Image (cartoon, rainbow, N blue to C red; front, side, top):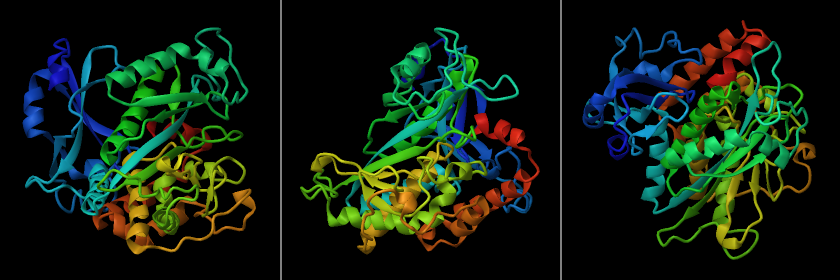
Length: 443
């Protein structure tokens, strides 16, 4: 309530929760009801968190006609009220998550699924520390073909990749200045920005958090912010996995370490190799990777990114300081030893993705799972077991995965499988142009 009290000019509030696709579903509420929202929340049908990518009900879902489409209760998350800097009028945002009317967490809510994973770590006396790296494109979609927007400074379009180019960053300096200011206002810990390996592509890292829920909140809110702010500038900010056929796609790499009760990093044994526990965590991630692929590549377009020699992994393997592998152990001081999971695309739901990665790592730690040897050299040429190569295959792997069943509640698994199978059927009717139009702003 503090932020809203300090901003009496705010007249409206958006309340929003993430559905299974990570799409914000919510309402517009007059600010005078702020106190009631904090104490009583609001109601959505349970089915609203289980919509397809078009915002349509899932056919034959037990949440809709069979049960009468009942309501769940949406309560504020720990974030409280915050600004929405991409809107012209002063407006507050209140992030929500879903519960049953009797106060039990709703198993179909992706944020509640991540909270379950956080509780598993807490019971084990462990604290994960998580950071995300989010890649996105700035795109002029006003014409028939997508292209890099003209620089607000020079009016020119730069068509090269300009990897780590200051010129590319400077071309959009005002946008990035506004973006960082907005991140500060929203308590999103934005760190370094770079230009990436495709035209108009950038990456911003978010600072490590010793709180799984905040790390996922930060990533989800950051995506909303980039997409909204870009439209103020007249172009799209897109986390779509592969908007351009001829260029690399967007990833959301996840870095994590784990602390014990004394605050020591359990992946650190004083050597560059890291501890046995690190390798157990890697083994857990590798074992869960076929079943998790649907969460790392949740849309039809996602599989255009997961191709050889495109800076996105295709094989199930790990390595030290090797960006061709799905799991990378970055070079660092031993105390900062961590795992980087490079499989997720920019189009993911951050709550489900972080839950899948951290849940799989904990599976491996609990099982003391043996880890295969790390690879060296180009992962694309190692003859590794491969990730599911298609959306349909990934859906089937997710539905059958024993590792996934250890991480997520059955209700969420069933809901997501129904959602993705419905999307798979209807996406077959869309042209390439319609697919881009659907995903460009939505994911």
